[in-house]
Image (cartoon, rainbow, N blue to C red; front, side, top):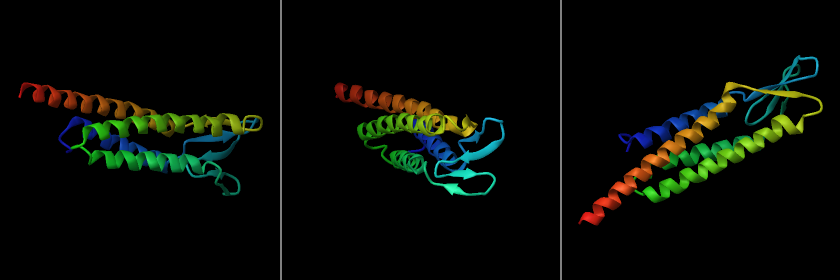
Length: 152
């Protein structure tokens, strides 16, 4: 299972998803440039008061489901077609995650606050790339199995 390179790609994608769940995605600044709040996947933490606003809870739910599906996908190495479908579904969900992050970060508070993403906001893109590499590896294995079936 883990000796296949695509399983390693999937595992690294799971680890990056967990890291993305735990670290802040960016910061909000007011018009004067002072730091107002931090955006996490589950909440927005206001710096002055320590108050947590749970408006971005959908980011957390989406990333948690993506990470869970990707973790389950590691153990589906015997069912390559299902494994490829789940990877494609996770990649589509990651694109939706970015769309929702753009809505929260750049559109929702556009008039009053400016959003600056952190390095953590780029981790889902790395997960998309790793899922694509895993998809190509699984596809290569599937093609190899089908070509060997033709020889019999």
